[in-house]
Length: 92
Image (cartoon, rainbow, N blue to C red; front, top):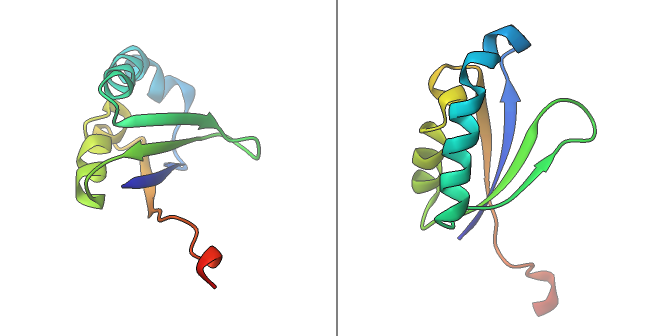
């Protein structure tokens, strides 16, 4: 199941608040990418943030994968989770 995860930053987030966790964040995200959970990652062009496409068995599995990220554990960011399905209009 493909899942879209759109990062939302805490309005109180500052670079100083994020800096101590960035190395661990990158390492954890790289591990999820290597195991196939993170399939694609994009920077937002309309402001700060990241969008991740995950491949998971369920929304709960995706939430669990994202919950392990250091910036999520530190409550610096959270994610809007959007489960995706194949485009159905072709059947009409």
